[in-house]
Image: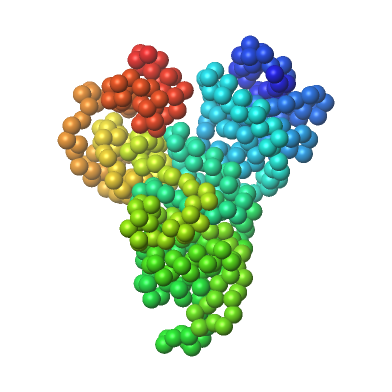
Length: 443
């Protein structure tokens, strides 16, 4: 059993959590602020800390940063307002896990068991808390789904290393945004981020684009060119759609990954490069390897840390969240809002183009809508063949709740009552599903 420190300004929640932990046999210490929590961490035996992210004054991230210099204990972050940004920040700063309130007892027990088993794993934690957060612009990762929160956690965990990352997912799921988030959260953030689309470059020009060339190397080479690898020196190189790279070029990329040096076209000597490689593709690379279209050795070299981005149709809970985000981005003054019918149309669409398609649909709707409320005709999506049997009238929140209930009931029916599988299909954690089952009277 462990000595566990709870740092949370919500007294009622703190007392309830403490009671649960004491029932599990742990000794509990409580603190209502970051300052008090750090003081108790210094003066008392603590094996593990559970810290609220949002607190008056110095928040949970400050505790996480400063606690690392006092005592190496696993820190579990809690928040009722999870986002891509704060999840990545928490994991980057060394949090053991990042959970959303309210926390189910089973989830708490499982997380505590893992944390207590890894007490020696907590090592160095970055001190770069003063790095300015990225503005809420087109580079922001926005999601409330459990599947994407796992992606955010992995970004935070891997950001501090130079390991090669392979981002997998359908077209439009946000692979470049993930690459940029990795770069921003890394020690290379002040150095260049260079993105290149391997599918958009003619095969005969790709070597020059990546490795550069010397003057006179070929007809038209009137001056030296440093190439993308050297442009990204000290920073991150994002190789988008690497699954479309020609086989001869794949062999040369493999050598660069192994040797960390490049030879410009027409050059006589190799030049060292210091870059972090993030690659991405929507292709099925194992199938391409089996068909001889992609090198097996490069496949293994790339997937040091794989990240898979789920398609939007598997996380419908993000559709309205993202739609409103895009409307806020594009709105001058007061952003336009979605009508109930427009929200229905968005939720009923399959989104083959994923987040990119949704962003374009919101940009189109904002332009075509002359009033303050966006209707289905402004969005321009096809009418679904079969819509749920729901009365789409009244307040938006009521209609969304009705659709949510219908989707949960359908998911449970399709999975023969398997709640774990239903939660996966809906893009929810089991804890979130249980809460929604109770909300909608389906439990």
